[in-house]
Amino acid sequence: MDILNPTGEQFYAMMTAFFSGSDKYRFKLQCPGFSMAPFIRHDSLLTLAVLQSSHTLETGDIVLAAMHKCRKMVVHRIVACKNNRYQVKGDNNLKSDGWFNREDLLGRVQAIEFNGRKIIPVPWSNKFIARASKTGLLNYLFLPAARVIKKIIKKLTGYVHHVQV
Image 1: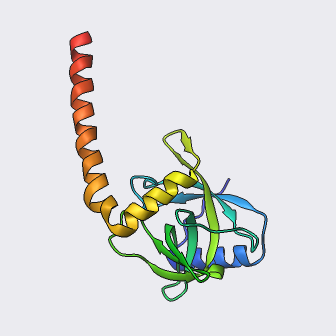
Image 2: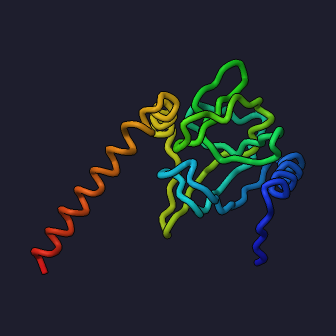
């Protein structure tokens, strides 16, 4: 299998061509960057399905969005829906990418793979994360709290492991 490593503009051109001609394909994409961390980590493997016109989009869905002005693609979460327009934002970003028309949203993430684990996005948790991301609670409260809890668990489990040995 050949691996392509296109520039942002080349990837944009490939994806817009691919999605304009298909309505039933799924594909896997290795996702660079940290804008969706910790839910999608750098170099996660994403399974995306082409969005058909019959698909309903909801707050919380993780989508592949075409940013035509800068000719690039982003995989970010829908944080708001209004009049057939969708506000898209990276979970780890402070600002949204703006509002998108339905035809600018090309695919939806169906699975996330990282370090041998496969995660299927769940609608109720996606909606919660979208609301926390939109209001800023995710960046200023939940993620810092999770980091502290993780450190505490590491210390406790390290201590317990040390005692057991």
